[in-house]
Length: 127
Image 1 (cartoon, rainbow, N blue to C red):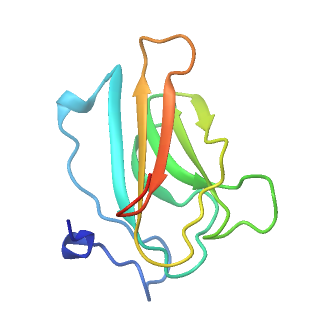
Image 2 (tube, rainbow, N blue to C red; image 1 turned 90 degrees about the horizontal axis):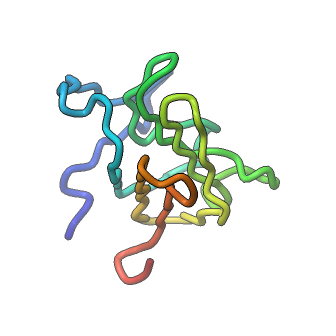
């Protein structure tokens, strides 16, 4: 798999850089889903940089990079957060993505009352 073949570069842009697409109605009111992405951070991210987002003020989902609470926040020390409707879950293990591509994923199971969010991070050869 060559993740560079379909990459969106936000380098050199000013302000918000993102790819916007239409939202299919079948994504509304999902009770379980998995989101995944290959990310190649060329510089430190900003807190709350979104990976995938389909949210409004009270509904939807939002997957983004977050501070671990430890200094310094950056590409070698960040957490992932998933917000579903108005509830947040934050990864407990810091993600380290010093150079190159890293695979990030999150799974959500709304039918479970505990442990309903799982975060994953890895490279081509590890997870």
